[in-house]
Amino acid sequence: MALTQEEILADLAEIVEEVAGVDKAEVQLDKSFTGDLDVDSLTMVEVVVAAEEKFGVKIPDDAVKDLSTVGDAVSYIEKNQV
Amino acid sequence: MATIREKQGAAHTRIMGVGGYAPSRVITNEEVCTWIDSSDEWIRTRSGIESRRWATDEETVLEMSVQAAGKALAAAGVSGDQLGAVIIATVSHMHQTPALACLVADRLGTNGAAFDISAGCAGFCYGVAQASDMVKAGSAEYVLVVGVERLSDLTDIHDRGTAFIFGDGAGAVVIGPSDTPGIGPVVWGSEGDKYDTITQTFPWNEPPTADEADTGEDGELRGPFLQMAGQAVFRWASYQMAEVSHKALAEAGITAHDLDAFIPHQANMRITDRLVKVLDLPEHVPVARTIAEFGNNSAATIPLAMERMLQDGSAPHGGLALLIGFGAGLVYAAQVVTLP
Image (cartoon, rainbow over all chains, first blue to last red; front, side, top):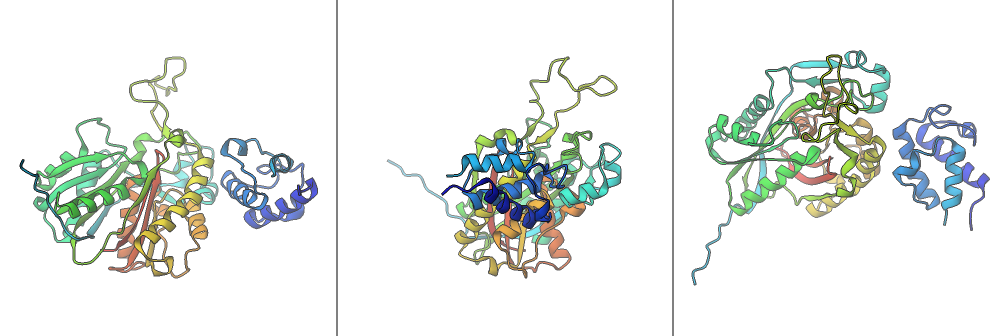
């Protein structure tokens, strides 16, 4: 069954906390990964790979550069989940 | 009809000696930050690099190769004229032809086979695989493999993404016959669909037109330089190379617990950290981290790190080490070896 936006956000926040050391409460839809959460480009790749495993989605390199906010990532996962 | 007689070489091979050459100019992060808008802390966090070595005009790829080779030959107890072949892995010998290996062979006093290979940062491991197979096939008894680079000649010092990464240097090994297995099966390959992820800004024969050209203050054309798609390379190197590492261990019939050293190509400390994690490498296994001091000098990183780890005692002579090189192509190669 497809996950809701809230469920995806909650799981993604846990990944960002674990991989990038950002408090998961900070991981909100309107936050930008680089600007607000201080997730650098290489850490972003680690977040993406963990998200691929968790949600069973493929996030190719070309798509990664378009994920500037947490909301972008949540929408991408929501649209592409199996 | 007459039949062709074949030759048989040694049953087993090993690395008999290793030698490195780190050039004399120490380039600090502070100096790099005079070219790009960055900071020491930013560079350390992103790459783990604290300084890198750049060659002087006199420290040519030939001179650095000869220095590293001399140390490797002395450590192996082999003289230059005993070398049946010289293989040089490099992307920074600025002559399309002839090969740098011919000059190195001549300086070392051998007329053995000599050729260069272009396999980017995997070049050293490619060379080790070739050399080992040559000794087993009887094509040569002793083979010299050198990884040498002057990436400073190919670095755009104003590119914030790469200016702090690259360095220069050389490392060499002598490979010869052994009573016991000393070089495991190579796991190697290429992924040409990622050709554009690490490349040069333009081909030598197709310089950009006057309007597109990046010119310096003197109006001269700048480049070509090395360029990288950082995120794509990081993902490939950190995750897929862990799978390749596992395969190399399996092919050699050992597990990560049997290792006495892990010597990955020194591309970026973050890639090394991630590889160690994905590989689930046991804590007792020492890991090469020479990038902090030398930067990424491509084909030279693995033999330089090997020499350093043996010198400082962090890896034992005769111990088992997993080597993995990966880079432009994209290409990769990994093998388990016994340290000299």
